[in-house]
Length: 364
Image 1 (cartoon, rainbow, N blue to C red):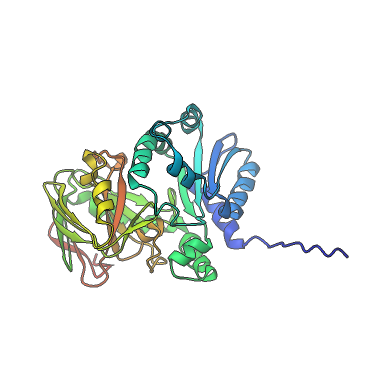
Image 2 (cartoon, one colour; image 1 turned 90 degrees about the vertical axis):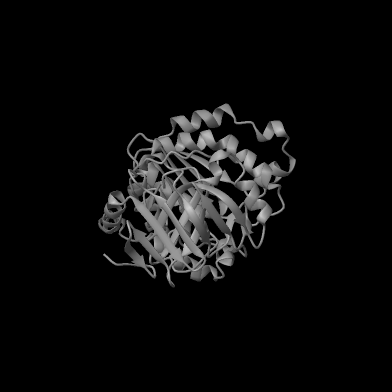
């Protein structure tokens, strides 16, 4: 008998279930489609299950593994010319794929902590047309796979984080549509939103805008309804409950004050310089692009991952920067930065002067 030990681990059936949701529900792969799968190498188990399902559908998969350390070296060593370069291959790819699955499985969530945020902001601005081309396809999904790094950030063991993630992803998403339709109907009829809570009293118009339901077709985990505020209508102040994270850096204790739609005062207890840099990327970065209401009850703990945290039931998020155009939003920016307010203790959302949600629970 050989002394060599084979380290073999059965694929978690929950991983297979999630792959099935991504391929057959989220982007609904068809025979002959070409699907791009971008994934961190630590997310290989989920990427592999997606790959197998895509092949079984008679479709084609283009794989783009993301290896830890390469992006860090790019930002550390790239010249200004290299930071501003976009390859012809990437442009072609973004316009010619039929669907896109991105699976994040971070090895080190703090990788960019000592990288100049200006470089990250510059690169984001340069790649914005690529992002827009992918979004224009309207057939993409962004997912997270449980890794030790994500579990550490969430202050959980890996096993606990796996349970947490799959509880929020492996659900009957078609049933969620019925509930979200109710939320959307209220938002579509409303003209004015006001949000009050401790250190928060902010208002804006949503007149003529349409709510967008999020039922597992674009993000996984999912569970929110969002709408774009009218660009110059926001007034008041808001104090955010959790750190806003950008490039692995936490900006904590954020307080923003708005007048005629624009941020006129921005402070933070930690990393205020980063906050100021990000909201100065371009003209649109100081205006709201999104008001979202978190609805996923399986997500009940802050994890430092915006994909999870913005969906927490009983919270809202207001994103600075780019508005998604399908709901009538017009704000344009290279920035889209979600910031979360917990309303479960003392928070109220008013629609046209009437209470819509109190302490994180809807009153209709």
